[in-house]
Image (cartoon, rainbow, N blue to C red; front, side, top):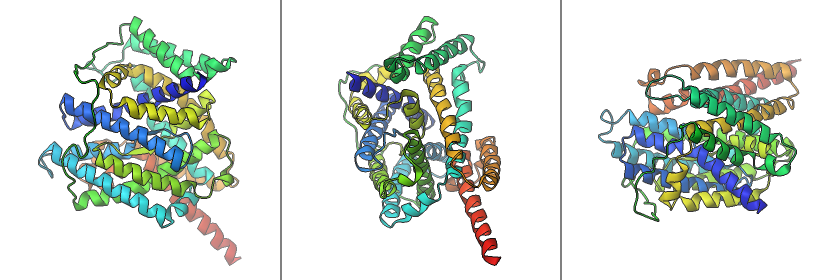
Length: 432
């Protein structure tokens, strides 16, 4: 019973964190309801399989997979190319699924050649701290917008949504701080269920199920047609893969911290195995015409909030995600969870991320150098978050997808600045 409840909680967390991305991408490509449902189905199947692959063969940590924000950005940018560079939305999606295939191959190559091991060394406590705080800065706006009822047709905040969100947040904090192990461990699922009920009483939980006659649907491989490669998507895939590698390494480091695994005790081949698993998963994403996945750092906040570190419930949760993707009725029902409820519960989860971030900072020995790195990286990363996405419209897709993501650009900046300062210090020492 305990394992099944924990597994179901993981399942709900993964669905709540993942279902918005495929729906949003389907909207920008103007897919019809049937194609949208298929896109959501294939993405959830990929995420479930990716989590299983990683926990069994990859990094072997309970880190849920979610739609990669970088791929989400690339899909959105490429949607603006329809009618300009590419003829139709379907042709553009064919190009993108080819990019995923290329990315999968690159993941495999950097893992097999040992490049992955060299990248992981760059993720010091300062870089991991920078990544976590930038992640929180980037997502905090989305959390609060969702909790006040934005976006909506009127473009104004909604009082009842704010009230329901505040009650849900307070309830989630209260459950998470209970002495009873049952309530603390299952605080996430209890909060989502209670929040859904609260929003129902407030009249803010409409139940509008899409009609479907199929009990079971099977996913289509290359749903948008055969792969179509071009030079632009190959260059984009190259840069995106290395940035996703940085994202993956940071997520693993954060989960190690949440599970009290020490920095120097990381299993020797963990990152290489994670890279190989990521390559297989990304190839699978391309073949299934879905969104590329990446380990989600927010899973560490989930583990910290629920005190559930066991891999077994996580594995079962991933299996449930993969299994229910074949049943439209279940997916359509879960998609009815009010967005404000998901944002409110995630808000509570991410408060634990701030704690984990400062625990990472405490591991840094050279605080003077670390503060310099953080200052430069935050100014660049946070600053880019305020630049309108339209400003990048004249740039190549690879460049615009990087610059439009303050999280990744700031993290890469932290790596470069810290390594430059370390080399400078070593040179000064050698000259004395």
